[in-house]
Image (cartoon, rainbow, N blue to C red; front, top):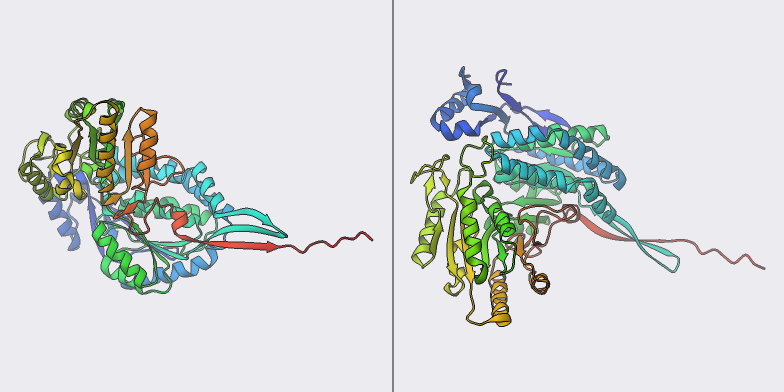
Length: 534
């Protein structure tokens, strides 16, 4: 510790904590928002080696920053560990994840507390915890483990098996907006028998370090896992990625980020002989059919504003049947009017400071100039909802775009919105009865098929006929949710992965235990017994 109140978070390589002597600092997010200058001044003094008397009022922790040599040590350690850990029985790896799951539950409050300190509103932090809790629940892990080794059939005197073998060393680069929860997908790489290296984001690493070093690693040690199976490093992202790409000891790279940068990383991985696993942008549609449960649809749609829409898998465009349009918009306005504004530590808050507030203004102005209609919101604000043209928060904003306005000519429809600007696309028809519904359905499908991204799609519809039609036609996504909250999670189904710019040319729903392993067929022939009869 710097003093008795400021915590220290070390890196972790080859089974040992590493204090590099080079530090950065994690402020309390509330202070960073309400007293930015004072917080900045305290951190500046700490970096100079001074310790202000009130430092603990502004700063929660200091954390270590690594260098190129530490990353190379992590690669070597992971490579050695992979040779041993990859031979652990699947049953043993499954037991390890069971122990981790139990330990995670014991530390739930602490995880949520650290996420809140890092700037995640409590509701968002709870949502992130549910992700981690569900992706390796006992039922889910049993399902995954059963797929890693199974007998297929018998052929003559042979028994045929399918086995998924670990790739080796998996390097993980989680995103700043949800680093800890996304990094936890690495547990599935462990289930597959891989060793891993995690590089938390340079400016928000604390929750990830705590998760892996203080919750996960003790369970690995308890189960005799070799040192180096997990490693936590930090430092210059570009140099670290270059070392990963250059090393023959690295097998897979799991990268989270924007699509343009991620697809380039994918290209570099292929050129270097690595397997790229890409978790990139999302611009998810939520469909509202004419007969749907409006309350349910609107409740699901409100997830769009978690973290001020700076989460990839929340809905970012609503596609609405004209017969349900007015009721849906009215319900959305009602729910938006009830949003609680405040600091991340305050109960009920869902909004966060917006990194791309300038782009929000650009997209909104473009849409209004092209004929979109402002339904609500539209202004930058302070955390308490007071208007401020330079505010770091943005009001939840809905705009109406009609289907005949060429929706994909609007940047807010074509691109991923990383701010709370949601286009509501009204889909209309001049026909009547079943012909009207059929035309609106086909228009909806056409709009979705134009989407460059394919993370999730959700549809709210009661008609069994159109439930079947949506299931049949909606294939441009990693996950399709019918009458289920868009941004929630379902046991045994992956929370990640998608098509097109969401995961690249080989994109699909990403099971990390599947993506970080390779399939091997095994045939075991047994000697035929000779007929002993005379």
